[in-house]
Length: 80
Picture 1 (cartoon, rainbow, N blue to C red):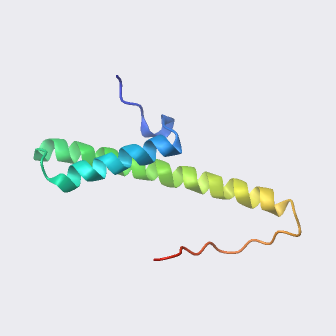
Picture 2: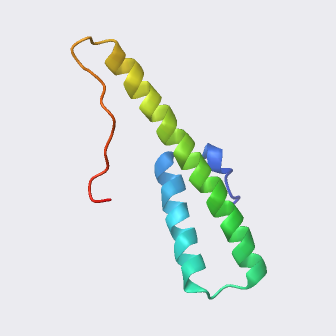
Picture 3: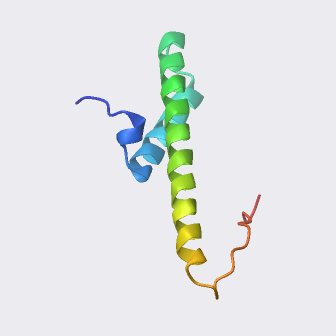
């Protein structure tokens, strides 16, 4: 099976693959050259997921701006 470009993956697919990359890298059981390739893939996946989240946030802002009764407020992560 051909590896899809990160930008062609859904958010969930990219997150799932990114999680797998992290597990592989944390295990330390792969050769350096392969680890570097997996790290590079992980960076691309992280950028893709961030971009998709940014797009979703923008869509939400647009939708909420159409309703004067729905003020925007900054998102605050719980448990950080």
